[in-house]
Structure formats: C-alpha cells, structure tokens
Amino acid sequence: MSSRTAIEWTDATWNPSTGCSEVSPGCAHCYAKMFAERFRGVKGHHFEQGFDLRLWPERLELPLRWREPKRIFVNSMSGLFHPEIPGRFVARVWETMQRAHWHTFQILTKRPERMPGLLGELGLQEPPLANVWIGTSIENRRFVQRAEHLRRTPTAVRFISAEPLLGPLVSKRRRWSDGYVGPSLCLTGIDWLIVGGESGPGHRPIQPAWVRDLRDRCQARGVAFFFKQWGGPRPTSGGRELDGRTHDEMPVADGIDRPRRNHSTIRATRRPAAAGRRAEGDRVAHADDRRGLEQPDRTASSVARAIAALKPGVPDRKIAGVSDASPTPSTGIS
Ligand code: SF4
Image (cartoon, rainbow, N blue to C red):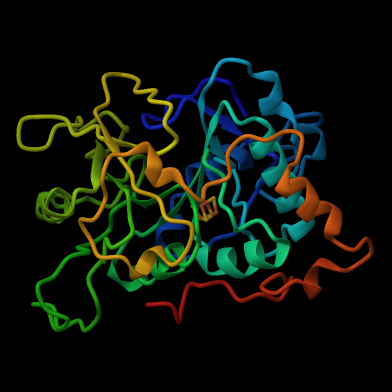
C-alpha cells in the first residue's frame, strides 16, 4: 500500500485486504503473490502470512488522509471480490470511497461474477459513485464473458485490463481460424481498455496482431486505449510503443480532468443502469451525462445508509454471491 506507485495508469495503491487465490491462467505468474510469499514467516512484516487472505480494517480510512486528489488502485495486492471477503467489509470500502470523493478509485477483479449480486444486495449499486471505476481482467478468449458481468454493474467507468494478454480476443467469426468456437471481446458499454504483455521469469509472449486488433476495435468504438508494455524479462524490456507511438488514453468520467504523464483522455458517458443495452459508439462528452451518478454528499450518504441497514449478525454467506464455498470462475464462464 503506497501513496505512490510505478503502475502507469494509476497514482497510488490502497490495500484494505491482502492475499488472494488463483482464478485462471492469467494468475500463473501473479506478481502480488510472488512478492508477498517472499516475506512469509518474517515476523512483523505486512506479508508475514504470505499471500493468504487477510483483512486490514485499520487501513479502511487511509485514503481520507491523502488530501491531494489521486487515482487509487484498490487492492493491488488482493481481490476485493474474493469469495472470502465478507460483504460487510466491501461495504466499508465503499463508504470510504464515497467519503474520499476527491479521489478516483479503480477496482480491478478477475471475479466480476460476484459484483452485481453483492453490490445490489448491499444497496451500493444505485446510484453508482461518480468517483469509482470498476474493471475486470481478461487474459484470453475463454474469459471474454467476464465483460458481461461488468456490463451488469452500474459504475462511473467500466474498464477491461487485458494484461497479461495471453491470446487473441478478437475474431471476425464465432468459429475462429484455429477451430475454437466462442465470442470475441464485446466493447459495448466499456470505456477503457488496458493491454499489456507479461513480464518476469517464464513470461508468456504477446503477439503484435492481438494488440493491433484490440487497438483498432477501440478506435472504431471510441473506447480509450492504453498500451502498457510489450513485456519480457523485465516490464520495460520490450518498451511501450505500438506502430511507432505510445497509446496512453484514459477515460474521464467525473468531471475532474486529471490527466497525468501526458495521458490523453476520452470522456465516458455513464448511465446508471442497464448500460450493456446501449449501443456502442453512443458516448458523448457532456457533464449532463453524469446524471444519476452519486455526487459527493457527506451529510446524507446513501452508502452509509445502506451499511446501517445491514442487519447486525446476519452472516455474510446469507448475502447473495457471498459464500466460502463460492466457485471460482476458472471454468464455466466462457
Ligand atoms: S486474481 Fe489477481 S491477485 Fe488474485 S491470484 Fe490472480 S492475479 Fe493474483
């Protein structure tokens, strides 16, 4: 957890929980796991417990102490929608994000199937917070259906991280040239796509054609496109240029334009619900598009009301989608 980070598309990280468990092939070289496990058993270290899941209630209000507006990556060392994180704890995270309205929070998950049900049960979905972006990771075509769960989740900005990109996500036909049968990545309702190759020992190489297909599809749909890196032994090994230039577009949805590192911006149109039913290419750049988003209101916080309405003593497993026995989505979602 840090008020600074080297991740290109964010300013800071905030980890109210740490630890996670593997979901799909994109987890094979999980940086967070490798980092955390180095400190397993080191007395007093943040990662004394390695990458085992741990909640840190004492960190819940940390962003309130950062007065300068930042883009904050939530749970860079964990997964907010991990099945073992109680809904009540997710609600506390939401409460902080609403109170810290001067920040933009970026939540990224490989478990988007838990989001719509849980946030709905907690009363946190409507209206969505204007300063919260939610994304899902999609590493290969088997997992493009994660975008469907994301589309069902009202939020200010929806984004997809195709990193590490392990295969093509776009095909003209449902039957792909190699015989695989399945859908392409659909960008309807998506505001931002991040693409990156894997880095580190045993990195799996990325193909330029996969990246170009995604860039072209983003350009055709008006989706902000951010190319993070080619990957290799080190994150910087292959550089960041695609066809002679970098691609650093970012969405702007909250009316607070805070480009950094010369990023260009594309304003996102947000809709309070059923965004997935809107046609692609219908995003326009007007502040009025933020109607229906929750604006800062510290005197009548709907999030606080939602948390207060949670009945004490109700086990979290009673909340839809929350169960220690929840299946991981490594199969059955593509
Ligand atoms: S879901 Fe993310 S944090 Fe969890 S193991 Fe996979 S890559 Fe690591």
